[in-house]
Image (cartoon, rainbow, N blue to C red; front, side, top):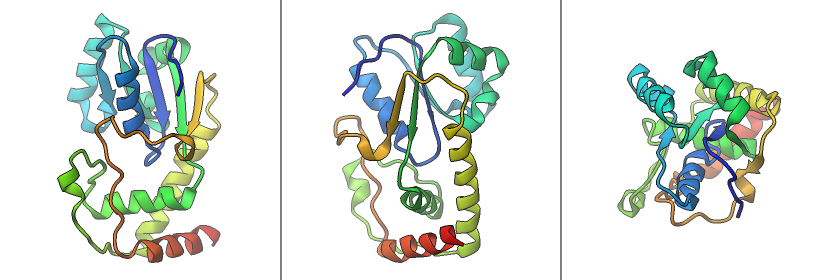
Length: 193
């Protein structure tokens, strides 16, 4: 699909763009075993400190983070990554489906990723809360805008919709709720307002 030419590898994304599975896939492509850090900033200071400790020792790693939170790693780390890393931007073309994915994960108590086939055998109906959906729309519009206009010279620019099926990276596409069509229709209406 593509060739990575150096490390570290920095994947800059926004939520629900396939960045986690992309990072896992890139790890599989690497000829050597390198660590893959998935949003250490999301898990708090302890995980950021673990990442920074590794960063001080080696620059052979993959870091996936949301562009709007890159500052959480501190100015020295952020500058090094933006100046020296192999930088990948991944976005999504279909904003409505991105919002829907975010709503579904939120309604399922932040079950973002599915790594076992047994997890996929359920059917649920998620609540359609228009005020919460409006919050998600505003947040994702902001995050997408920041990434779209990032003053970064990306080595690779990808869209979720253009990725081939990545079946061997250890992740499954989240199952759709029974009211997925209604959720999409509601989001479409709210995005147009």
